[in-house]
Image 1 (cartoon, rainbow, N blue to C red):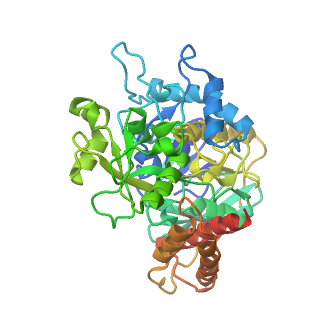
Image 2: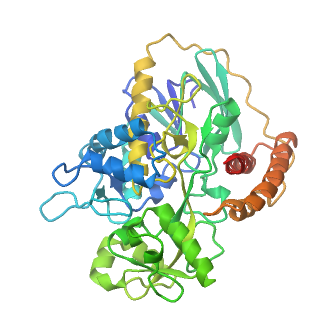
Image 3: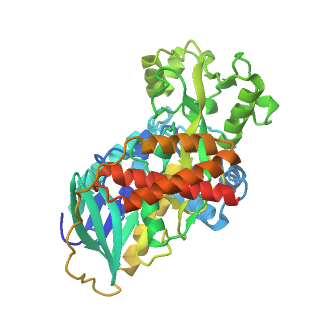
Length: 488
């Protein structure tokens, strides 16, 4: 690791990698990866990328309206306009420049699908593993750039502001190191591990949001959490990470069934199975209360074995490995945590309240999602605002020479061992207090416990480990979410 860089990017999902690829070859970029480079929520994304690529069959106005409806019109209209109108160029770059293999029709055109909340077939995809395909191709492109250094198993845990930039404190494996840069981009992803069950990667603990909050950045709408209606609920139910049954399965015609194997969405929304995610998740919870039963299913077996194995090969294999053959029987599903609409408040160039500090991807609050994200707008947001962050930084880089003072000594990593079970206790509190429909009594009691945890974590002189950093981040995320729910 060098003593200084032009830019430090924390995170190797779509926002971080695409941001790095938008810097010229004469700028030194450090990409920090919490695990290996490929580990991210992007890699887990299934459905696809929503983009208006055919202006004869679709329009920007329709995509904007679908996004606003899904977000309950709490979206920022300027950011939504940028997302929808600039996004198609970034999506074209994915397959034209970086070789992303989107599915095609026999005539060679892109095979766009439909998902809940969309009025047109505008989601381009690579089977049912679009995020993995995009991640692999962007990782390969980054590795080919000599100006980009990749630091795996490295967590940015603290930033010191200095004249013209930052000292970045990094835990690299078990060693604390310090480097410097005039610009930092936080692309650290979401907060899934704060809940008992999540579709997110184990690395999604809100580290970047916690760091920005500690520095004084505005954190907006952290309580705007999306619970995906169709996470897999079969197999080992003790596993915290649930794999997703993609929105595209409903888009291709799957039926939602209750414990009696009966369709029920007509009782809650006229859009039936193609209602936005928050509507479907709430409908499942209300139906579970009506039936006093939490067994729910997604049934697409009528589409036939040949179609399902070709269209959803990854989902088919994962279900089969857990004893469910989706070509012959309904898939057991239930809502679980999936996505964060809020985060670090940024402007349309992904800039935070702090000079030279940027945030992009799920950890940022651009305002494009409002209260609820429209399906397949997440990868698009990472592309658009990751690029815009890089472009804004490039415009400013000529403004003075960055000469940091001597690097400080790295932090001492030794200290007391972290008490066991604090992270699990946080999960249990959040699951009781704010799963789909908040419980205000549990919110109030949970907040008292969370605040005790935070005080203990900050005063306990614990060893500087990954476990400590993540537990502090989880407690901070829980504190902010519960405070926002209480205020609302």
